[in-house]
Image 1 (cartoon, rainbow, N blue to C red):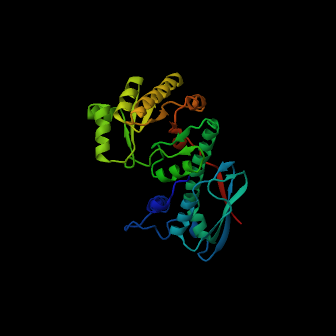
Image 2: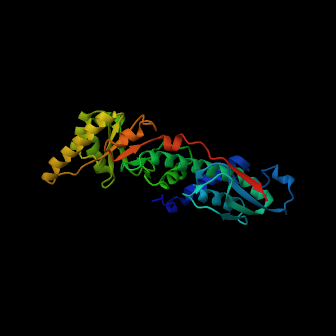
Image 3: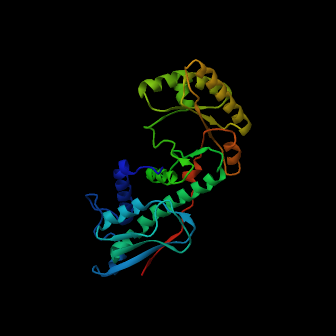
Length: 302
């Protein structure tokens, strides 16, 4: 299911505002400069125009909410008419949307709007590539917090448009991820997990481990999810078997359930399928959001 953007309306608004401010400039009060786009002033203020935005690449579209917000803030009288929807494949030279309104406004908002659309569409397109590699294995691909500054929600949304891809966590506030430094500071895996359950009952608690011994400790501590950091595929198969054995033994007495296992660390498109076939539940990959190449888009006045 795509990430629900309703709780993030303010985030979208603020992100777009910052994009416009850095492009157009601001006055002493922090408002957009009335005539910040000096090139647009070459065009008569009363001039009206229609523009078409075209994709030069094959891609999956993502980011319409950010485009709409650009023109809503810049000039609410501009009409944005979408020809495609988020999550849809488009081909080269396909019209994505049309703009109608003040010629100055269309040209001033062009770059900010296309920056959002080409970056978020690139994220969705790359995720689709990764999802195809693991198709049929049942594994879920997860993004990370390695997102472009200011585009956390946008990239998380783009990831969620793709079947087989999911959001790991939005930020530091919605789930625990106990790593090596946290464990060291708390004293042990057991102490860290226990304290996490006390701090925020009901929140998922994930622990990063680097060996089968640490995995056993995390299972005994009651972690909900366990990240297998830099395990080889062979060692990951052992981890999956250990997890099942532990769960079966515990379930017989009604004490615990099987933890979810997540593979992470150094996984590339060349090794991804092998990791997916080990039987882990999740594979987290920072590349989904940090290694995307912008989709080539173009705007032309009609």
